[in-house]
Length: 445
Picture 1: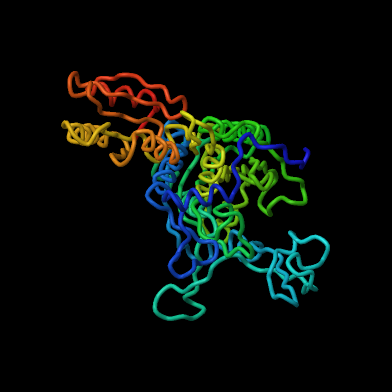
Picture 2 (picture 1 turned 90 degrees about the vertical axis):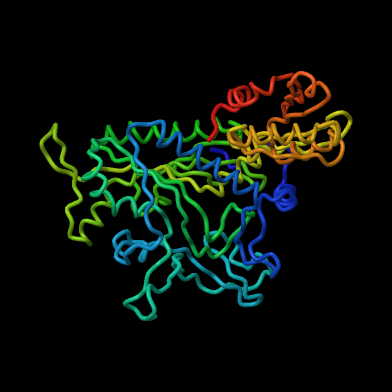
C-alpha cells in the first residue's frame, strides 16, 4: 500500500478547524485562563453534543440494533492485578529519548536520523517508558495502595466475562461493548485531539468459538462493518483505507490487526483498530485470579475459553475525523461561508428557529415553535441580525435545518424550512414540523 498522501477533497487544515472549534464553542484548551495544560481539552456546548451523537451512533449500531451484543460500564479503577495479568505493566511502553541540548523528549521510534528534530542536538540512549498513570487508592500513599488509571476499557470487559455469561444467558458468538474514559501518559501528543492523554474509547469484545475458520469469518465481518459505519456517518470513502499490521508491529496479544486509517491534513493515520486477541486475556485473568473463566458449550458438551475479535475506536479521534470531512467553504448569495456538512444524525444542533422580524408577534410565535421542537431535537433560537447572517452562523456549526417564522406564518401556521446544504426552502405546517424533520434526520434521541 502506498504511503503517499493523495489530495483531500476539501480545503480544511488543522489550523482552520482548531480556530473554528475555539471560536464556536466546540473544543477549548483545558485551563485556558492559565495558559492551558499540555494536550488536554474541554468540550463546549456544541462539542459535547457532537460527542454525544458520535457515541449514540456507535451504540445504536453496535448494541441497540443487534441481538448479539450486550452493554457494560466498568470502573476506571481496576484491581492492580488486572494490569499485571494483561501485561500492561510489562509491555505497555514506548521508547523514550531526550535531547541533550534542548532537553525536549521524543518517542525514539518516531525519530529518524538519530538527531533531535528540534535543534539537531545529540539524543540520549532510548529507554522504555510505561504509559500508565499511577496513583493511590485511599489515604495512605504506599506500595499497597498503588492503582492505575485504566489505559483501555477492554480489561473491564474481560474481568466481567463470567458475570456476563452467568447473568445474561448468552450463547456464542456474542459481544460486550462499552464507552468510557481511558488515560495514557503519552510521551508526545500532537495534532489537536488526535492524540491526547485523557480520551474516551468505544470498544467491543466479540467472543467466538476457538476455531480458525470462525475467527477468520468474524474478523472479516467486523473489519467491513466498522469500515462501512464510518462512511455511513459521513467520512469520504477515499479518505479511509484498511491497513493490515505486519508481523513485527503486532501487539503482544494479537495474531492479526487491521487499522482503519484516515487521511488527515497531516497524512494517513490510525482511526480505528480491529484486532484478533485470541484467548490471551481470558487465559491471563484465569491464571492470575484463579477463576475458571471458561464457557460451557451445550451443543458440544465441552468447556473452553473463547477467542476474541476487538473493534476499538476513540471517540475524540472519530469526532475529529467527522469534523474534518464535514468542513467546507463555498459561496451562497455572493457571500463566502464556512459550513460543516455533518450527517444530520451527528449534527450538534438539529434545527434553528428564526423570527424574520422582531415585531408583529413573530418572536413570540418563534419561541412557541422552538418549545415544540426542543422536546424532540437539540434546537437553537436566533433573532439577532439579518436572516442571511443567522443562516451563516448556523451553517458554520453544522445545523442541518432552519425554521423561519414570517408574515405568512402569522396567517396560516406554516413556516419556511431551509436545508443547510442545498439552501432549498419549503413551506411546512407547524403541526407537521416534528414529523418532517425526524424523517429528514433518520433518527433522533
